[in-house]
Image 1 (cartoon, rainbow, N blue to C red):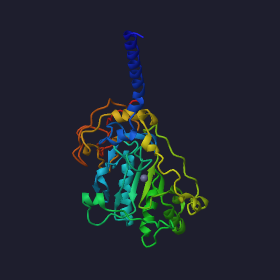
Image 2 (cartoon, protein in one colour):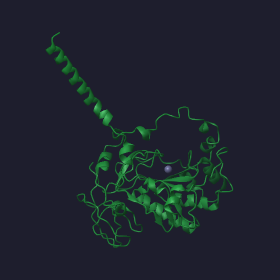
Image 3 (cartoon, protein in one colour):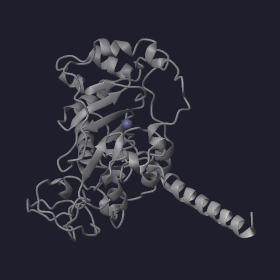
Image 4 (spheres, rainbow, N blue to C red):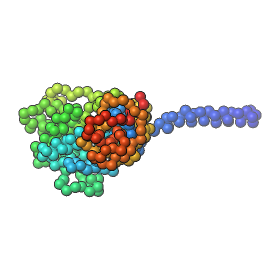
Amino acid sequence: MNTAMRLGKKSLLAAALGLLALAAQPAMAEERAKDLFGAKKLPAATAAQSIGFYSKGCFAGGVAIPMDGPTWEVMRPSRNRRWGHPAMIAVIEKLSRDAAADGWPGLLIGDISQPRGGPMMTGHASHQIGLDADIWLTPMPSRPLSTAQRESMSATLMVDEKTHLVKDALWTPQHTALLKRAASYPQVERILVNPGIKKKLCDTVKGDRAWLRKVRPFWGHDYHFHMRIGCQPGSPNCKAQETTPDDDGCGKPLAWWFTQEPWRPNKNPDAPKARDVMTMANLPSECRAVLDAPGPASAEAATYHGGAVPVAVVASEPEAPAQPVSTVSGAGDLPSAANAFAATPRMGAPVPRPRPPAN
Ligand SMILES: [Zn+2]
């Protein structure tokens, strides 16, 4: 074999290796969706839209619930998970007011979603399309919590870990009233609670029990409950969940939770979770546009200042080209330019809104 030939073979080999590297590149470059979505600090500044399913999707036009309201406080603020579809944020604020009127001092708000949803770095399989929220089962303390306290304060464990029954010393009629109030909203399709809490409701709720249908037992959910609303108008690619059965759910399905079976140790505890391995290819293709969409000027510009219906949830208006979002100075002020995040002035006038992401 002469030198030229050997060189030729070598360069062929190099070329082949190069091709291999190229071929391998898409797989290697296929970043995990949780890294991409977890890195987004601000929402996609387009019309509000949930895309995909609760555990496999993303959302655009998210708004943040303010860190404090008269009847709520956001917990674990450093996680930056106080974002949701405007309809979700509106429901949380409404619940906080109604619950306060019912005798619950105020809501401590846990995770809602990341600014653009998607899988999270830690915790939660769902919470991906801006329609899920965790609310603590601990009432808001009378004195305002500092930022440090919101990061460190523990929630109250409401359920005995051995018996899976509610700790009777901790459960109050106000807890029941809070869950009933949350279940009373037509947007709320499902509330997840620990089986012990479901059992407590089944055993104690008198009179109207129809709302128990929405309250579903699930592992965890013993420090907080999980409130899920349905797909909202303007979200054609939002995948609805199955409707809950018609009965109160207090029979056989609940009894199963008080057998050994649901509590057997996981046979494969180290198996990767779906949210850990999902790539963009696993999410609806529209989520790429959500990821790439411009954000608002600041978190404040995309903070929901309640009372008015956010422009983004007004469903049937002519589409306008996407515009950068401008800052709104505060609740009650007229927005300097109409955008998906501005509070709608209370005048009933149609306001132009940005166009939803492509497709
Ligand atoms: Zn949750």
